[in-house]
Amino acid sequence: MIQTVTLNNGRTMPLLGLGVYKIENHQAQHAVSAAVKAGYRLFDTASVYKNEEIIGRALSRCGIPRDRLFITSKIWNTAQRLADVEGALDRSLERLKLDYIDMYMIHWPVPGCYLNTWTAMADLLESHKVLSLGVCNFSMQNLEELSSISGIVPVVNQIEVHPLCYPQKLIEYCQSRGIVVQAYAPLARGAYLDHDVLCVLATKYAKTPAQIGLRWAVQKGISVIPKSANPARIVQNADLWNFSIEPEDMQILDSLNADLHTSGIPEDLIDILHY
Image (cartoon, rainbow, N blue to C red; front, side, top):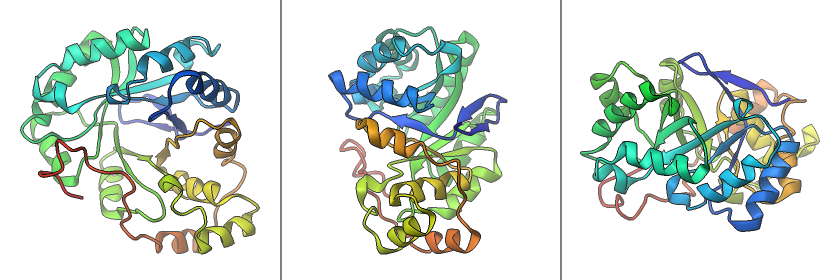
């Protein structure tokens, strides 16, 4: 069974979910069906992925009661600049065919916008159209600025994390403040699947390099949302709960950090944001 983590608002969230970036058409139905059968209950999408309608349709057919699913989406930069927070949420809800979203997130900290976006999102909690608020790609400075204007702390900061990209200080900062770190691209888009250390550890634990990388993260209390449309890999990615990585091997994996970002900054932010 997939383990869960308690968020700072008392709600629980699975530590493992399915990322659906660029999953389209018939792939979505097959991916969601495979994930549900493998025990996934967390599904992470975003308005900019252009697949909320497809994912919503697949989830409506998955056979799992709504209150047992954890569905997240994100507001894109354009809507932030237009101060159209509630409108963006309503459009996501319409596409997903949902009455509420479990977690609504700021996709990127758009300078000059994200503090107002956060204030508007906090107001939406009263509407019960969103149950939890999170952020993505936020630095310590971004999070400090949020805390200066709001008593509502994000439940999650979604950032790129994997053995080759381990922002330890940011992770520790978040965890010390009750913010769960959620790793997108936790498989580094395949970048470490043939890494010598990951392969050796995979042999030692009779697992795959992908499972070693994902287990490393969840063992640190980091939620992971690996993207896959391949049913066999979706099942394989969920097979994380019957083993533990020994402390000395965790340290070895920690040491692999190369600040390797496999995802880029959006074009409309590339000149003002830096990793």
